[in-house]
Image (cartoon, rainbow, N blue to C red; front, side):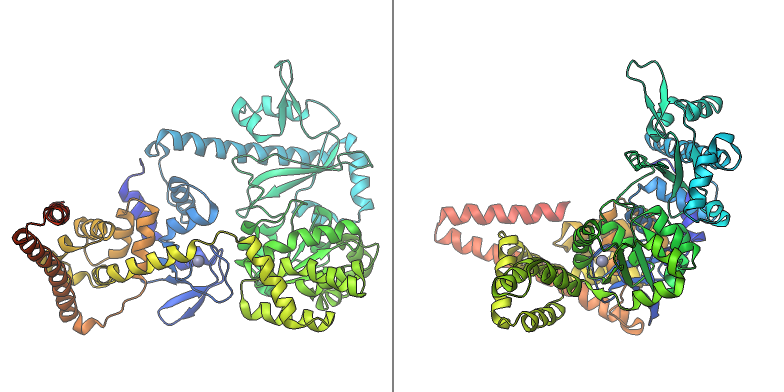
Length: 589
Ligand SMILES: [Zn+2]
């Protein structure tokens, strides 16, 4: 790592973790901490906590935790230096790039180059649409789609010329490096390696922005019936399709205001809704929605309404998307539009109020699936069995057992099949999906380990919350008696960091080497189990207890060795000696 430590702590000191996380997670203050729905695991009740005083976050559900950097890294799926840069940019702190390690500098440069190129090409496409004589067809097309100039301007729609080398020329003129040009996917290499040609030709262009308003990629649509109708940029180091949602950069504030988000499929659906004042909308761009998408959206809205066409393709798309929402445990509604409508045509024809009115009656996922199944199979005896077979799989995806049992009840009533029989089917399905369930054994193991480490964890928690006792702990030598190597390592690390009381946690966090360490530290620091006034007494008794237990165990061992010697039981002797040596080795480390 080449970014100087002073820089890192400068950035951490300038930043506020509540401010940083609030950009992505809805936080509410409760007692000492802020709470929100964890963006790293699926949950319905908030167990994700942020502490402003200590500048850390910790999830009581999945143990994710750390400081502002850890959050940014995990949330955006980026590396440490990238996170440092991102936070530095936010708080207007300059980092000299020489201080970043060479391979990381290359990646950062590549990404910056891609953003720069994308932005330049976006301007080029947008200028072409506005002024080029050859763009008549595109302008006519957009007029026919009834988009206003305001919307076209706000979302920087453009036009790619009907030519093989328009963007190639732009790239050459601006001396963009070959690597960046190729990686952007805007141009492709000719088969004979004699040069490049444009990927997007004679299309209406939609720049795809990431959450920070940078151009990550493009989509292009033909203006007639030729195929492929839509074409998108390939995945690039700045365009991660499993994370980016079209329009979120503009919609995020409105999603928060309304508390819910409409998810539509296409560019035009999104733009038409936005134009009609329905601004809490994002588009999935036809790619299957991933858990990352859902988790990112959870940071802006509690409820999600999936909007689909009523044709067969729309219904099957809805069925495909539903799984991930069920798994993530989000309040999800399905809005199927009246026959022969898509969101775009519907809102253009009937307007904002009609659309919102329709959305009010959007059913739950289970209601939707049930209705589709009933329409497919009918309510004959055979039909009802088939319906049950269709429904059992989605039911297993619901983690919340209370919710699941409500649906089971509803299903049994609708189908007039005994509730027990429905439940049996669901269980059957669950078991075939989870044939190997070893996690139970692992869990018990974990629990045992937790029990033995608990006291040592408490010592760490004390050290982090009450730095004034650090000298006492050092003096007692208790850390040498720790069973857990991991905790021993962390405790020593804390001791070794030179800290004054100011920014204590910030410095500790910055001094941790791995994410895992930061997670652990955050989990010990987030809660203090003790009261400040009796902390010295508590610490002392805790330390004594650890030392005593450890010594006692060693004594028992020694006694056993002595009695084994007397009975000359050589096998046991060897075993015990070996054990004792192991323990001694632990101490000498
Ligand atoms: Zn979590």
